[in-house]
Image (cartoon, rainbow, N blue to C red; front, side, top):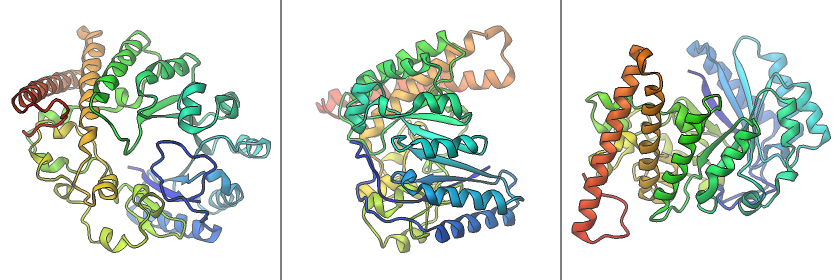
Length: 388
């Protein structure tokens, strides 16, 4: 598996998005020497572990294009000096600083650079979420020029009710685009139902347009693990934090992931705490309440957000339960319908996925019945969680 390494080039950003999880932005920047040291360290680790997939470096911010000169020099050095390890370079940008000089550089290296540009919707959403218009972004130039690009849509509470229409609009323009709910958003009671309705609209669209690359949860979600009898403890950690994913701050210090960085939580002294955590022990990343949950295996969590917001990597954001449930319900139904379109020619792998998706549907149905009974019994009209 390719290791993902976030390299924080600067904490500074020229926008102020309403959902941004980086609450402690400063003008601090990484030096070229520090960036080279970070890359050298990770490349050497790939050599020592004989990782044939190599390393993916995400040049990140803030807004990384504020460090354009560093990007140019760092990339030139990587391409010239590292020839024995596979290195992929990704740059995540809001796109507003892509002037003619930068466009020329990206065009010259278009086969070597993967560009991720943030686009949240049509003008009303873009202005509301990010404070800039679509016309401020060189979307057509990116699509016409760069073969390795992705537009990235972040779903905030403000854009939740209509994000499917905006995503379909971009699909209709043949844009390569993905969408994810904002990290750490203040989800309210009822948001899960709104999200579910939007996902059903997307599901119908994707079933009618199989040539379209769907939103990531429709193409990447798998429920095969629901068919095993493994305990919930195994599913405490839901990403590769500290193992397949790491991050470096502007000073070149190693963190388990970019959500633990000082520009996110305002803490400059948490490395001692983090270094004591055993990130290989998944059971340490789920609390006593969630460990009993019937649908824990359907839940994604962010240990960094848990720590930043609740002071404990195991204490999950219960506001997001409804979001996880909505995704599982809609995506598993989508998988069933898609597989049944070809029901007479299903492979053994397809049959396994079909069985798993049906299992997911049953789990969600049972959970909702239990939730409704619990709410009726306790009169908790505004509750969105239930104990197993």
